[in-house]
Amino acid sequence: MNITNNRAYNFNAGPSALPLEVLEKAQKELVNFNDTGMSIMELSHRSKDYEAVHNNAISRLKSLFAIPDNYEIVFLQGGASLQFTMVPMNFLTADKTASYVLTGSWSEKALKEAKLFGQTGEAASSKKNKYRNIPSIEEIKFNSDDAYVHITSNNTIYGTQWKEFPSTGDVPLVADMSSDIFSRPVDVSKFGIIYAGAQKNLGPSGVTVVIIRKDLLEKANTNIPTMLKYTTHVDSNSLYNTPPTFGIYMLGEVLKWIEEIGGLEAIEKHNEEKAKVIYDVIDNSNGFYTGHATVESRSLMNITFRVADEELEKQFLVEAKAAGFVGLNGHRSVGGCRASTYNAVPFEACQALANFMLDFQRKHQ
Image (cartoon, rainbow, N blue to C red):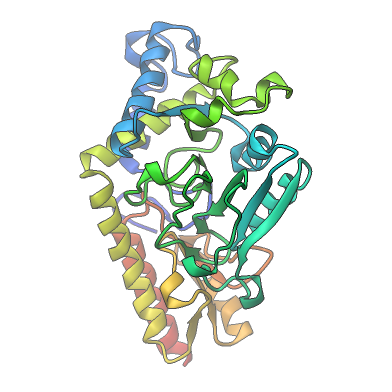
């Protein structure tokens, strides 16, 4: 436990750590937001006070992420999992194929949903290597008339992350960036669609951000349910129905926090420093700890590793929890250990974990 502020060392994979400054501001404003005499959660989503919050969040997204003018931003619900359905429902037509790059469980789930709507193909896959790496750019194969190419930019379960994105020309590149959006600068113009659940780097669970190029909206399928059309939400500024107002308020405050600490360039440097202290322990442990991901594909967001002995691994997780480290168990589907070092996880927490790992190794090696 961090005794200076009574906060746990939170390495949860999602919902995950939020900036303490943001939480404290939300706490202060929770009962009486902007002198309205109401909580942000009580305000009408049609009110001017909420409208300002909503539009400021969109404005900050555009500015921080350098989103070009030919893109729309919408706030949705349903997480990335709903986007697995909405993307093919809106853009996969009978005469097209959607190509998916498989790098883990979430890309597999996205592909599974797309198969319900039309023809699909695997542009590349690292499954045979137990998803230890991201396929090279040269491995990715798709057709020039494909509906789109889909990737998952960071893989929370396996701890891998794209370091370079493919150029797909006239074929729209679609990216699920749920677990690393706003962790580094990205050239948005390379993508047709970017979508992300907020609960890793952008705020609490409940909000999904979708960034979509305007020309794609003109080609979208129209014979689908109203709530599942992107155009419904674009045309209404994400206010067709009641949005997750508190989540959007929190998202805006997290973006303000990112601005104040220096933007995405500063965030990226900070994330590199945090991950390094933990990866260094793994790399210098002489096999006591072993990382899952290959070095060139390592994620800065999710550090996945094993302890050499299965019984020791169980003991490691028990002792880590007792020491105040939360969320270090690997995903239930693969086991092992995982430290999720998202934007709001402080360097202090990563250094404390590294020290704990070193001490545990000294005691048990």
